[in-house]
Length: 260
Ligand code: KIV
Image (cartoon, rainbow, N blue to C red; front, side, top):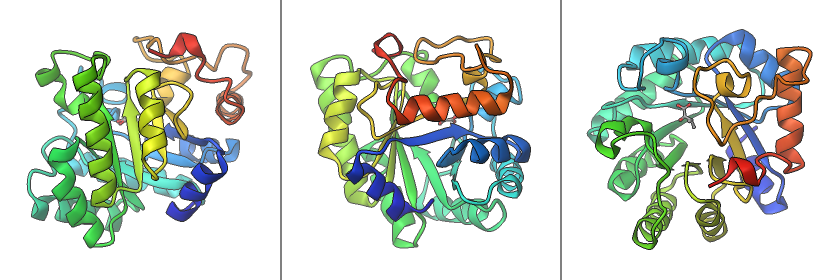
């Protein structure tokens, strides 16, 4: 899977299927099931390390998990999160992205934030680093947001998120995660940008879907409204991944009950 292929999928209306991956075995099972994008998310701070937030995750830890995933994958696009405070200047963002690519095997880096991070996105893409943006609910901003709540519910917040999406696209982002925003807003953003969007709690109209794998497997203590437990009725983890891929491709997931 390459960046141009993702754009072609958007143009064809073929949903992009993504999951978070933190180790080689899961990465291999996901690929066998047909997952297009493996995201080494800093959600590993919560589901692997047991923290309450993603904030304690370090760059070294992201490099470590990314390299593990790299040994399990062969064809899915390998996207890795730049963790909290790792992109506060362009120079830092470039140095940290280089480590994720050179030591961790990443093919694209993801960073949270809207138009305020557009200069960082522009610096990365100017140096040939593909970037995935991430707007809506920003787990790295949990203390500022006051919790993990749906974003963009009122008109001003919705317009602001649309402006963020357009600004990230103009800065060169090639993929955009929309987390926990109303489905109608996600649809609007998806129609207005040329880059593929991947929703998590953002409804069925996004160009693709991503989930935290431990949520999909029913293994995390939280049970988010936007997730379905794909282990129900499955006979193995690989089977659950196959069911997820099928449900995203035929757009039976997410259903209205998983959306805001
Ligand atoms: O860290 C992560 O797993 C993510 C997903 C929620 C998209 O950013």
